[in-house]
Length: 176
Image (cartoon, rainbow, N blue to C red; front, side):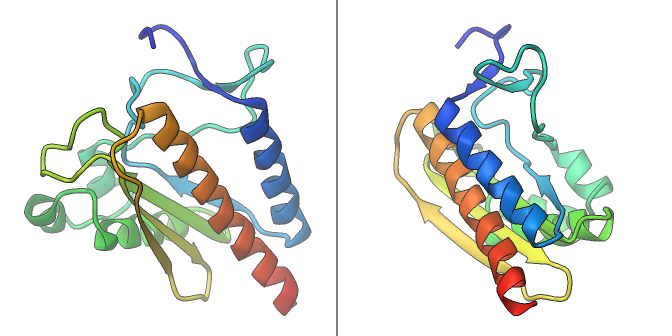
């Protein structure tokens, strides 16, 4: 993928995103997402969908290590000793994002989408997620999808993120 192109989101993923947005609206929830990886892409690329015509329905915010520490309160020692791809980092990212935003649900994602293992030796296809709703215990998910094309891993990651957001929204609706 050339550096000057947008990361194109397929119509199927766009449709799934619209379904997730409807679930959030029905539950009167809002969400914030912390994504400390570049999903195998250049950080400067916009996230768009087919037919976006210059507008995207959402944006992913990529965080470099300093932003994880300063903006979201992730422990510098944790990052130094264990790297960015682990359960505790996504837990701290989700908590920091939720505390610093008006959202009722946060989702944090950290993983290795390749094409090679990361600087800490984590394998391609290892991705951690943390969904955290206000007043609830965090839901941590670890996926080990194995080495696949970065684009395929990105699709799997987006769909798993949508699963977590949607199930959090539906569980709030069912409780209410």
